[in-house]
Length: 266
Image (cartoon, rainbow, N blue to C red):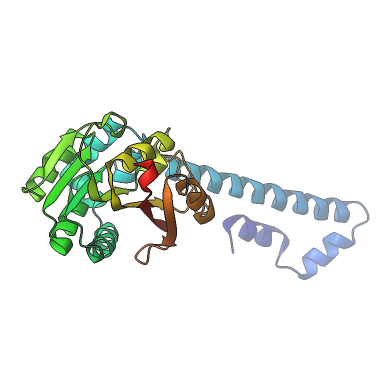
């Protein structure tokens, strides 16, 4: 029982009490009291709901302003990832066990093709590249990212790799690779078509491009620009080669695409 309801009962008695019955039976006062109690309860309910809504809004505001990896990444720019990759606490949030498992699944699939050369476009901290190196032992490993803090850590994790601090759009590598990785990148880009043209150019004629993006049918995060469903992603990628889109086992909300390079496009 709420405090206001307890006060009503102390004054008028509990429901069905003789006092309430007598008050209700009064010709004018009875209906007026009944109507007044009804209005009071409705207004009290509205006030309580408004207070709860305000409290929830305040909590959401505080949560959104909290310095977490997810909140920082909402800015969707290089500075955001510089901050995440350069801060041990934020980086530990970013490299949660789910993400590490995610990288492991991609590395296992990549190892099946036994690539001799690998480039990871948007390599971040190099954790995925390290997993690929451990699983497939390629001879040539290259990573590209636009965040200095990410490249710095990647060089420590994969000392045998070659790393370039560049935007994907400005990438001018002349060589081609058996495996081109671009994971959790295309959903952030304003020009995904231009990015795909770069990936195709980097891919050897017999090579493969591995792409992951969130399922746009479920993804509502405001840090993203592109929201492809499985069929939409397949249609988009078929412009650049034979594409197969499946779903990640470690994260069913993520789409996993393998594009087999088409010689005429490379």
